[in-house]
Image 1 (cartoon, rainbow, N blue to C red):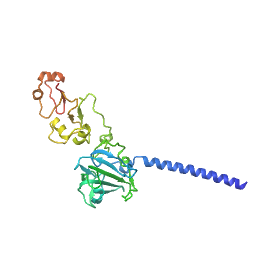
Image 2: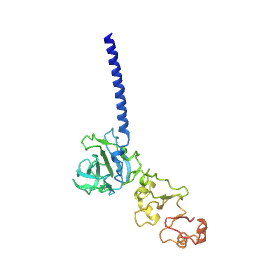
Image 3: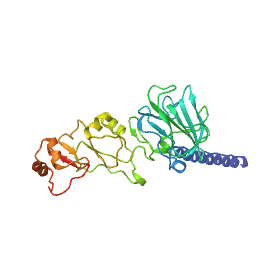
Image 4: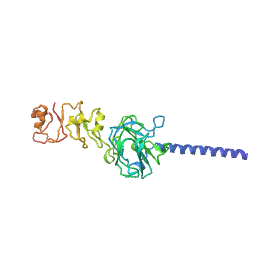
Length: 297
């Protein structure tokens, strides 16, 4: 009878241990899937471009994120740190390794050129190099890795960059030097509002972090097309700036430029001043302003 009682106690102990292990394993699995925001919440994205491959592809061997972009585009450090490697690798091409104050390491590979040296201290957002196509690469892109701990050959400490910056998709545009590269959150954590429905169709409203290159990719146009359509002499943009998109329903509309007058617009567009005023419900005595959208047809 004693042995039967002991056997029952042993079975209960084993069941309790199994339940405890299942609970512990479940918590660990869940924690691994959470966004690692505590240590990396202030990090900013390293480059502008388009996601071309994600972490874990190629039968799990791809331990980083690939961002395709324009050769020569600046590549920035995601956070303050120290350059622990900067060299030309047969596989990585021109590559820079940064060790950050929180113990993480980041890798920036396939660069066209490097602008920092080993043991150099770098600030957050400091340019490390230029996007390229060096090493074992099949197109211009940045291969970006995040390691929770030191980089090793087998990359045992690698984590998915989506856990730092939020989940994205292949083909999605991303923006440099912002904490939210997907532009789901605006300045100071405020959600980015979509353009007002009252805005004229075919007019793009520039958001925080956007560049002409990114906008041109979004609409399948060249930077030159957009600059020519809008009379731009520089690629620099301002937040909330309105851009006419060539080939869209923006035809028949005009974005007012610095120095324009109702008379100069009417002459350039072949429309009577009075008709221009009437179509846009304008007060002839009121001033027009740059980036104002006018109907001209």
